[in-house]
Length: 230
Length: 113
Image (cartoon, rainbow over all chains, first blue to last red):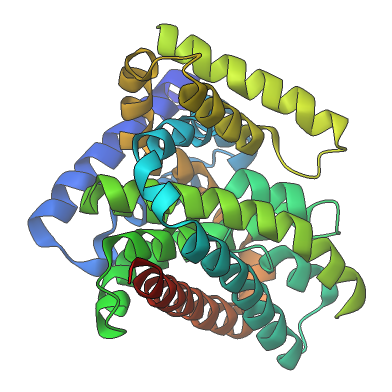
């Protein structure tokens, strides 16, 4: 019995099955806390605790998801291509919003973390929180961050932006679909982009573009901040 | 199938280029820009990549779940600093959404006038 539960196929099927189920529950209830990604992760944590399966074993079993994430980041190039007309018409806002996003994203996190007196390695771990996981890890690890902390904080940022982003944008009277998509991608990377794709093709493409550009910008900026500012 | 091949190829070349620049930017991001460039240049047709890309993008949220489960391992470090990490994450996420959305909209309006 245990052999089956520990098998790669079971753990992968469990993850996908729970995700589908959570999606169905979310669509019924529309309750914030029941975000499918969050709900699935929590249930799997409980499952691993109960069965005593190590996280490293689970991570290895579902490695194909990691691979698929890498592929879907590349696939965002297609999304950008579909919206190329929009991109041309908005080169200036894209540039300025990207710069603003990178600076605000890093400055607020590092500022608050320093104010709270967090240790240096923790600050470095959470600094790239608005960037997609593969890039965030690529930034934090060489600077001395803890990868496990980075991935959880990035994950939470994504869920947070995906849950509250649209409401917050409406509150700030941001109605331009391009601006809305771009903001979601800049703040909450792939999970925000998944939400933006639900809103529409324009939002989705802008979000994917924002995720790429802020990832790029943060990767350039953060090593400098890490060296000179805290 | 062809779409998967194109995406994998872009990623592979992206990884190669990433290594050349010392990993400063990760391979999949370079791969994304590469795929975009190939499509714009007409080297790759949109229809070729479309089915694979649509599938991947439609399921993207699923691929993040293992990172959330990572909380099991980083639980103690995060719990020790939970207040600071939560405040920093919350404030910063909202600040980025608001500022980026606002800046984009403002500049975009000016540009279209």
